[in-house]
Length: 143
Image (cartoon, rainbow, N blue to C red; front, side):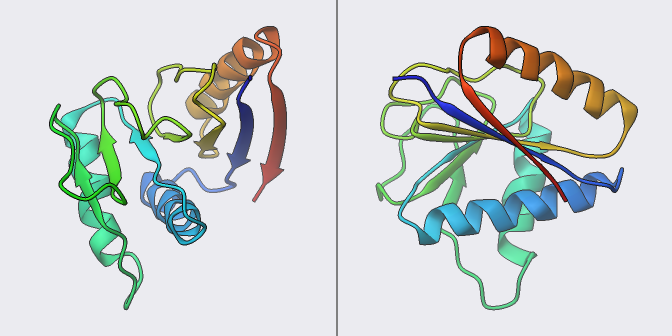
């Protein structure tokens, strides 16, 4: 089974707004019973997302942790990191990195969040072509 890809293209060039939007998508996935992996380029970026998940919305609680190779004590935890995605967290991947996440089963959905900067849009176009050549179903949402 091939994954479905959703691109969310933000008008803003702000990295903070991109990460805030990512937190909203992560919260939505969590509330629907999906325990996603947030793919980042670096430990620093993973730490930023980790901190923002604690503060982006008052009253929101999303169990999460930075993944450094050790699985969480509780299965229903969002993992954030640049490490290879562990078994059990591959169904939904929120891609905040420049990497190409796995497109084959067990990955079911890939969520790509692009800001309005030319660099982000260009990287998004390259990933779009990659996913298209892999035969994936792609949808684009302009925010």
